[in-house]
Length: 407
Image (cartoon, rainbow, N blue to C red; front, side):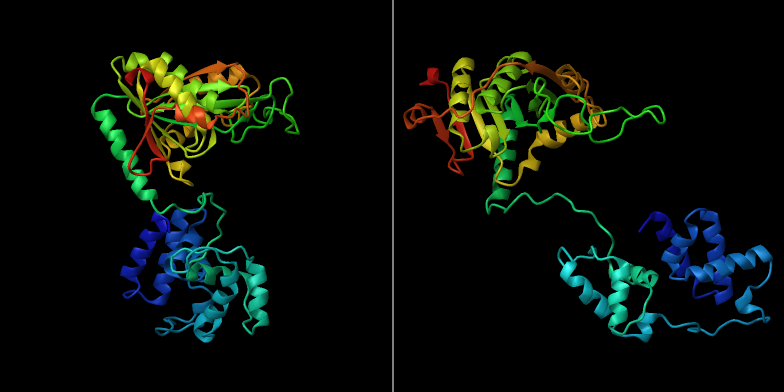
């Protein structure tokens, strides 16, 4: 319910017991006129007066006298007069409507807002067939009264929830605070959705001269030369700074760790010259997945290069949207290039690099033209040589990889 409707409802609650039917009708008409376009609908919603009644009141105001329904002087209906509402005359109407909706209803029936995908015309026909002759307009009013509204699908379900999900969130939060308190770098990493390079439609709208939209290809067939851009992001949670390594080959664990390596050289090292440890928060799947052997082997190489212990905390299955980089960095990149065809690799890099927010987010992006082989296998022997220290709580999600020089 809008603020305007709520305010009118409050006024009506104060006035309805003091004013007779005619004066209330005139007051409703005045309120509707003052609101302009859509005023009748809002007043009807707030007061439960019919639109016809409000129109009669407006007609009376325009003519300066009583409308058709009250031409006799002093003719005011007694309290409770007027045509009875259908739901009052037909006690089973609402129940039958709710039963029709139930098979197509999604969501918990106990919550205030529910929704249906059946049309009001079809519902009116089915109710009429059940002995409740109603119009499509009446069904709309009844649906509103029952707490239904038309809704689109919302992407929220990511799979079954792990029983230790909340505990892992708490563990990650505590680990982040621990490293931040001693001045150590904490980053959130992930691969953004791959983007086709070329004159392809990009979602969203951008200001252009009227009648002159940017023309793009009708069909989204990948360009064999330009291919796709693979943005792997590194978000510094403490400094609110981001790095994006834009790859053009494959999203592999080798590519993921190389992206972190480049972030450290370009941004991390200058910000944390005395760092002894690094904390990475990452999704549980993909090129940086908790079960991916190559990810851990490449992290071992990085730890050896930097002489630094690398802590890793993975988010539980089905919770990738909780990763900071998703809503602190990637969402703003998507906003910045909405409606713009990503016609070249340079355009992708420039649009990412020029993404800014009011809270001071800065992003650096560079192109990575290296090739990354797929299908690399890590043997049991190689895995055993990784100096990994697993946490007592879900060691498959939480672990530390130490440089070989520390042993």
